[in-house]
Length: 289
Ligand code: BTN
Image (cartoon, rainbow, N blue to C red; front, side):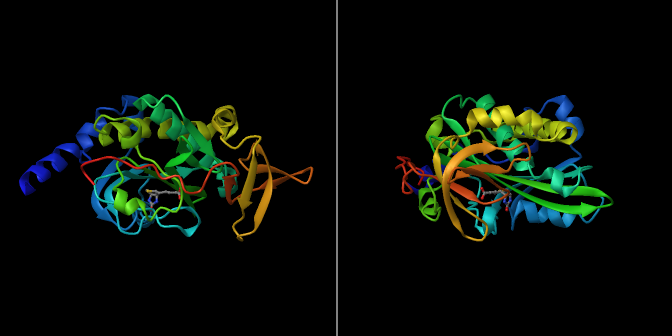
């Protein structure tokens, strides 16, 4: 019985593999990457690249099978069990000043949506400011961008976490409605394919952002923006709660919130949409868990 279970688990999981990932990355995109590092365990792929960024490294991708201190936005933990999800970070040097990169997280969220579409998830993907990727209103992926400066350039570490097959027991620690690829597509999740597709779209986005900034992503954001025109509660970085009507984002990626008839702009924070219940947790029937 023990052996049978083991065989089932190992045939279900797909470990990250450079050669398999490379099959899905186009030649043009391969030329942009200096190196792909795959680690079994790491504290955080973002932290790993932050340490590398002190060297001459640039255009480096780091992936890990697990993170012991995965970082989410606003100081949260990112649950990162072994060989289940995707934890990916990109170290990239931008000529723009840190202030010009404020909207990069918005652009990166649209890139993840495009990659998911290319993987076959054609419906129900939406985005929630500033960079949550949702499926049927539940969080599927998140983005954490950390900026630093070096030789007149801005070094960005772009971290992407995508839930692929989250163990139910661990998911209890996730404080918001969540989902994973396994709930959306019933066939075996293919993490290497997902990574390859993500990289193609993320790199396209980085290149376009370098030359044109956020402008070219605004239309796509608006199309996928789940909160546009809805009543939302904004939690600011100082934990202040502000209720208003979501009026989308400006050309910098700031949130436009109509409060008492006036539009106010916010650079950071988190929004909750009034009509999304906080406790949606769909039950997964899976022998693996
Ligand atoms: C969020 O809170 O939505 C952002 C989550 C970002 C998680 C990813 S996983 C890869 C990278 N390494 C980290 O420690 N965090 C990001």
